[in-house]
Image (spheres, rainbow, N blue to C red):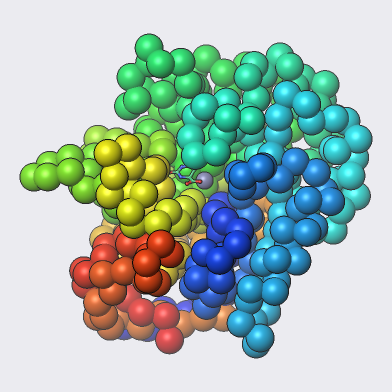
Length: 343
Ligand code: DOR
Ligand code: ZN
């Protein structure tokens, strides 16, 4: 198969930031995807519908003039989120979900939820109004090993949430372990998961073997090969609970190549091509359309896209960086060969 035509995909987990960097990254996404779920972890975080609508306008203004791209907005859950905020989301055409960051779990998560009990009334309202909850699934206490944080979150916290709120629609974002995959597979149809390209293509050796490579560092961190294989199996299984979410997270090169480098892989420059590479490795290109273009809108109860895109088996080289100076971003697979190209 040298050409692959798909219904235009959507990205169900994306960071585009705001200000100047937004202009540089949003059109990479809009080249491939019709829609994307926009993460709210700005400084300060997006916590109200009013702020989300202003952020949406900023994104629309940054798009190329001929773009049809639709940003799907989210709010950042805090200990202070009110029931009225949930009602406003339920009524909004443009804000579709809330994102839960355990406080301290990742980039700009300081304002996140400090204990789930604090937000039970809000989760109750989300369940009632049928507003999806998007979860960064890692425990945060410093005594926990970084490679165990997702597994422990699933065991200790997610299981409690799904039991307590059985009708709440939950997306466990960027799953990285076989335990998370198993949890999602066996949970009710209200529970789904996104998977990033880096977690399908690489294991933790990519960060640490033969030298330290900060551009492969993201959270949840890459895991062992057995976990990568479990993710690849889930993504290519045709199971509608698993869908595409890049977690593309731009940080300036100088803040990644640093004594304390930021977490996040930038993949928007080649996202669907990276997924095609992973699916081709698993001999499962026939399953890419479901994962990339069908399962996401079905879970979010949004219409499937009508347009199509075509990928061709064609090699090209990823640039060493995009942008200049303080806006320079080093993409995933910088300087390396890609095997698929969007036409
Ligand atoms: O690696 C990550 N980067 N993981 C996250 O959860 C957040 C993201 C970011 O915003 O940079
Ligand atoms: Zn993210």
